[in-house]
Image (cartoon, rainbow, N blue to C red; front, side, top):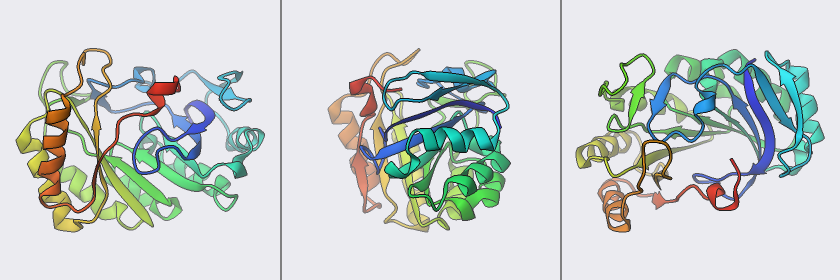
Length: 255
């Protein structure tokens, strides 16, 4: 499998913010989010950084592709059982569904739940892995700030709502699912309204996280508090569990 890094920290986003998590970060992504804070994961990685002392950022480097034996050894060295979750993140882990299944099966039943962080578009790949996943944390991408890697730079591509809705339908087979939307100064009301309608059509009780963007790259500003709360209120018109949660790990310097 192609991995970028393996390290121990706490979850910085979403429903399980603050919970101890072992991160397995996969290389390559087929989207381009203007606010992406890990553009180094867009392409397959040549090497994988493996942390050996929790929170230190120090360790050793492995050549890609990384074996499942190396992953399980790294997890054991970081005291796997002491974590609440193993987060399979990226990049986009569902570009490597066989690897996701291998890691999930190797690490499940040893304490932590298996937590999948995904852009929420690879429906076929999710079908392959869903039985191994305890928590699906899916993004809901808005075309005001996100395009496919295959789209021309600067072009506004397709809307993602219908594809996300199909993904959510499969994701609901997991024991737990939540949806996160990153909002920026460019986020449009109609985008939020369409998102709300699609989610409510399946289950109005699904937790939905409104995440104000952390400025990075070409995105220089976060939306005002008034704007963030207004967007959350629009979602709450049909959804029962809407929460505003920023990226907390940025406050204490964790990637």
